[in-house]
Image (cartoon, rainbow, N blue to C red):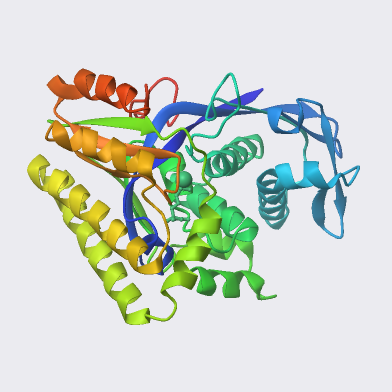
Length: 370
Ligand code: PMV
Ligand code: MG
């Protein structure tokens, strides 16, 4: 049996602006995991078990060259859309390379949502399941693909399911640690992907214009703390609203995107040079830019709870901001280690749930990034 453990993710900076071609973001992978195991099965037998579909064994079938849920149940199909797309693309790549189709059972377990209630924290379960299925099946097929090629394969899956996502979550879950991400031109990738004469191998095995994903050093003198607002949020709805809200003022959106990219560039340079004061300043600017653009669009990114999370952190001299699309989910803070406990206490008093998360360390025993 092959087992891969994939970390969840959180955005540090660059949200929304990273949706533009070449848009930049910094993310971290966190030490809550989604686990995918592949067990061998007779050829043509492909099954999946996940809590999302009630832990029953779901049978997959192939119709018109696509993987579908054998009984066509719409809720199961919706719950497994990243899994189905990942299976499709991995198999397409395998056939291109001359492999026979493998039978398999995929077992998926996730600790990314709240254990007791299943409530969503916003730690990137779609990105993690995409990375998990791609990595696990790539091992089963013994593809000789490096991490960057696997990332491109996983991004193709993510874009096939949701052409409007940036792929930052996929990069963080694939690479681990602190990650500097620059988004590809998705429209261009989709165009190449749709062409009859494009082999998947051409897209997977070669670098894409603008796409860049690499690990950067963590700050050394400040510690990352994460607080949950208590409200799950749906990112795609907010992305749509922000775009619509600002549609009348494209120059304002362009200015926001340029400022955000510059801010992320400063953040990455500061992380690389170990200049934690500039890291903190850049994260503060990233938060301010998001508040400004969301105000302009009339969209609530920083909810009352997330505003409380920030102001509590600021009373301790820490920097804090919303993480991801906002509207709920988590906020992050960078705080002096000596103040971390105090911050957690004050967050609790303000109704914010501190999450006991640490940054996932790539190459660790759990991460299996040999
Ligand atoms: O809320 P999250 O963690 O899913 O982050 C969304 C970040 C956006 O930039 C708004 C969307 C994206 O796909 O990058
Ligand atoms: Mg979110």
